[in-house]
Length: 354
Image (tube, rainbow, N blue to C red; front, side, top):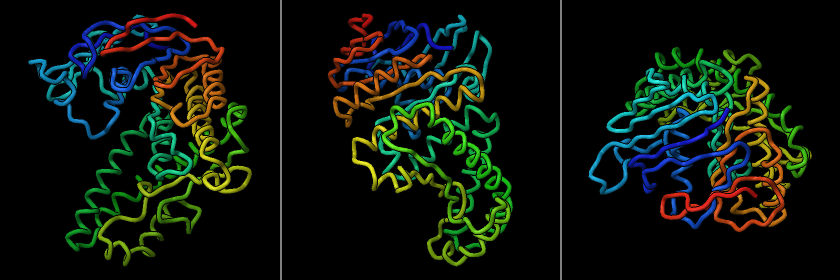
């Protein structure tokens, strides 16, 4: 499954026109600011994931000073299905003229998107590692995205109780089954990622180990018992900081390389290679669970790789049996198969097979 064509109308800085895509690796090249990332964002929206920045307001998406407050995206899939997204004060999504939700769309055309910040999966904030796991689970566990959203709403409500100095007992009761379920799903997701790392061993710089660290917990084996006990242990701390410190919103994935903390054991370049290996392992995990490869969107993931690292990355991508979109401003000269699209001033000015 993949995209044959995408039409952009009044979207960001992109010229209103149709862009044609091909199976395999589609390499978007061009200087910074010409629209490569906006193309990836449009595809991400059509796939049901929304803007690349979660805080983006719908009204900021139409082309600035265009005279219209509405943007439209149209995607044609390999199976000739047509997805239409209208972006105004809210999003309207239709699949073959039938209204659908974003979650239904994600199951129709699975997509995994990796941004420049995701290259810091190994040594960066735990939020990057949670994002990787949540993307994977949202594509393979039907209720995951909805229950995670419910949990986040519950955490915000608990935060309000704590800020007012009120006991968050009601919120904790509602959060316990959600937190326990998410922990179980994330532990299964980490196991899946670990097993899929074997398929990208040529890219991984060492033997990568993964384990889930439950946020603010880790006292009991049972997820329910662990959450309940962690709340008791951290009750005074939560009251003092007036913020929930127990639960999946504080989770982390512990990453090791040859048994040592990967952030310490690997150089910066090798940490970048480990990050890419984890991204591709997530893709393999989706294929293993749902039987089809997800489309991969990669934005400027080559920025901090050396020449050897870039060539290894593109060679690995070109060999994968899936559609990929990789945007890069870096020069490349490797001998790998792809379709190169040169982007300038918000449009494709040249496409050729390499």
